[in-house]
Amino acid sequence: MPTEQPMEFQPRPLVGVSASRVTENAHPFHRCSEKYLQCVVDPAGCTPIILPALGDPALVDTYVDRMDGILLTGGAANVEPHNYDGTPSVDGTKHDSYRDATMLPLIRRCVERGVPVLGLCLGLQEMNVAFGGSLHQRVFDLTDKFDHRMRRDVDDHDRRYRPAHNIRIVPGGLLQGIIGQKEVLVNSLHAQSINRPGDGVRIEAVAPDGIVEAVSIESARGFALGLQWHPEWPRPIEAHNRKIFEAFGDACRAYAAQRQAAERLAAE
Image (cartoon, rainbow, N blue to C red; front, side, top):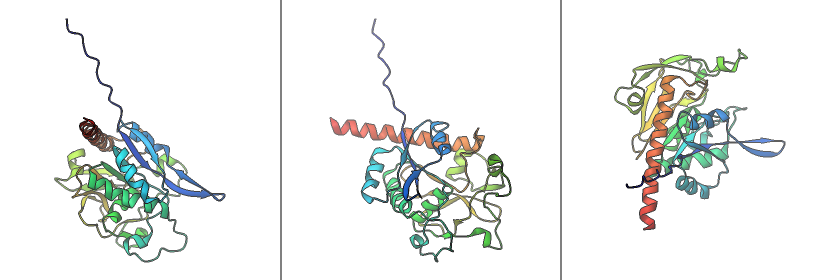
């Protein structure tokens, strides 16, 4: 009888997760909340690798070459306005120039190469700026918009992430294809948002006040989706948010298989 061949081991795809650079007692640290790492493991089914924001352009191609996907996290800092010809920020606004110098070119290279990209909150804003778009720096100052910031009047962490408003999903887009719904309820924890969409930045969903809640990149060779809300928290992750991470994980697996096949072919 023919012997059964052992199944080939398929390692989980590697997903680079963006870190933020913060300084404490004169020492810089590169930090990433565990909630982002958890969602890469489950529901995405991949292996997370924290990418330090060193601001070194030489690292960008290395990240692109080694990763099967990129998750752009939220963060306390905002994209520096000079990156989109914006007016100077008001005093006290937090910025992370090292993250800007790392993630903005990384996003462009990933989209060019077809590496899957999922941007969350600040990550969506970075995606827009990377392709020439601009941002509203203080949504809460706009008279025709909601105050989308995280609630500071409650102590319970999960309550801060509670659903805040519905979003309307654009028919026929990437997001609707994943979720399969016209509207869903999302949380809201951001002070900035998209003002002018960048080149090829396609609006996938909007809030009732018109704030852009999701985008995709038309020129992307692979998965490229940005969300203004935080789908990674609270856990357990809600059904429509799980679908997004699962779709991202599927895209990362497909890209990993494609990359590995190309490497085997080159080695022959």
